[in-house]
Length: 203
Image 1 (tube, rainbow, N blue to C red):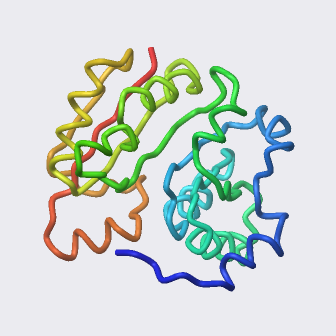
Image 2 (cartoon, helix red, strand yellow):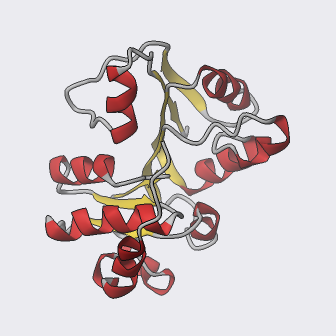
Image 3 (cartoon, one colour):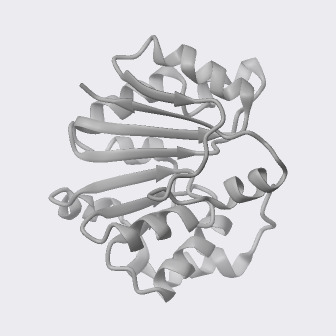
């Protein structure tokens, strides 16, 4: 479900620096209870979490500017004091985050990159898992959701190569009252697709 290019959304990011997490300012947020969603799309999940967890801070990581701009506009119109957009590749964010700095990481309906030659781009590839482990605080969580069977099974296998502890896995996850439904999740549930979910913890 690709979003058509929207020039206004790209321009919105440029015109509203107040809703953007800038590389040079990241250190000023490290004293907060930081959470990141990687591949945040139009921002529904981060917005829902920020509204219901006002004592925590949420970073929406979205490298596609025409999508991230939509999320930024939503966050700005709600005047959320505890959410920002990081409009770049998460790899760039990794280099700026120290060890043990993030409370929770959310991977919601990530691109499955189904071709074998693209394996290293999958957000649950072992190299990514090791980076998540590094930046998470002790007892921090990585929470994954997807409707893609192959990505789910692949991810469970990659977990065994990582230092993470698998806390729970659910082949047919039903939305809990304290969870937030993403745009993709709503669409896939309406189509009758099973949602897979697992939770990892840094020991």
